[in-house]
Length: 258
Image (cartoon, rainbow, N blue to C red):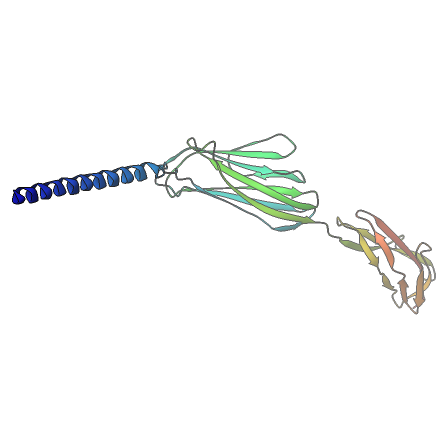
């Protein structure tokens, strides 16, 4: 009898242990199942379409009133033929469009848009175009270029270049006589003309004129003070000469006998 009771106790113990094992296994499955559902879903990104490379080249600095040339180039770095390629260049106010290479369509006055229809571009092929502008205003300007294909029309590749335009003074000096020939013993007047051919004011302009030995100084312009020493006439500095402005300094001399 005691032997039977021991066997029954062992059987009960085994059933309890088996039940606890099943409970643990079930709990682990539930935990791992819930942990799996809490993990963020992986999003599969669509591969981006390859695009061509675009660049623009030109001067970083230029003087006002000068013409400059920019060049844009598109390179097909993809492995496919690019269809219906279009290049554009936007010219800001302050520049005047002069000319361009290739077949293009010019936009309206204002900011000018130049458009080139390149059509197809083979893998590894490059198309280059240039355009000439006139710098009319001073300041810092950004010239932008963009290129697109039939499949990337809404997402064009872009490039830009910044150019600074500065004003510059440019003094031009010339002399001329008022009569020719001149008799010995007579007086004649020579004129020194100074003009600013630049786009910025000229300041502190100093003029010194030397008279030939065969001539004797008589008088000079009354609009600018001067000093005369021998055959040298030195005028006081002119404070400012605006772009396009001229200054005349007449000087009268006597033709001395030989």
